[in-house]
Length: 96
Image (cartoon, rainbow, N blue to C red):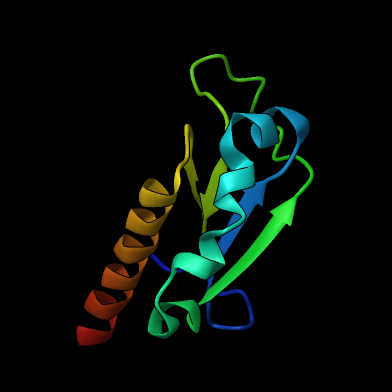
């Protein structure tokens, strides 16, 4: 389900802490450049210095949150897929 942020957009938060950054978050910061404009207009992309998720030994950096969904070992494709899933959920909710 889509989180209401006050902007009505899907929130994408990229962890840019040191570990996440060197493990691939630096590439994730190009997400905005890779999204089609029709999707980009519906997404709010921000960075944060730490999501405090490295403590969980089961998940691996880099971490991204798409609304409330946590993505570990995130890459551009997995983040785009999560955004698409959120958009699909939004469409299904609007159809009811």
